[in-house]
Amino acid sequence: MGKKTYKYDKVLCRKFGKRITYLRKEAEITQEELAFRANISPSYMSAIERGITDTTLSTLKRLSKALNTQITDLFNFK
Image (cartoon, rainbow, N blue to C red; front, top):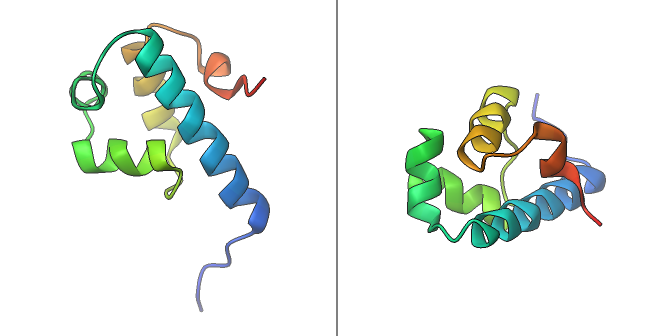
C-alpha cells in the first residue's frame, strides 16, 4: 500500500522551504552552514528548501535553533 500525497502537503512543503530559505538568507549563512548547524545532510537541507520533502518535528526544532528563532516563526508565511 503506497503513501498518498495530498496537494495541500506539496503546497505546505513549498511554502515551508521558501520560508527556510528566506530566514537563512536573512541570517547571512549558506545552505551548507545551516545544514551543519542543524546536523542534517546538505542534500536533505536542499530538498527542504526546494519544497520536495516533508520533515520531522525534531528537524524543525534543530532548524529553529540553528536559525536562532522560534519554531512558530518557521511557519510565518506572510
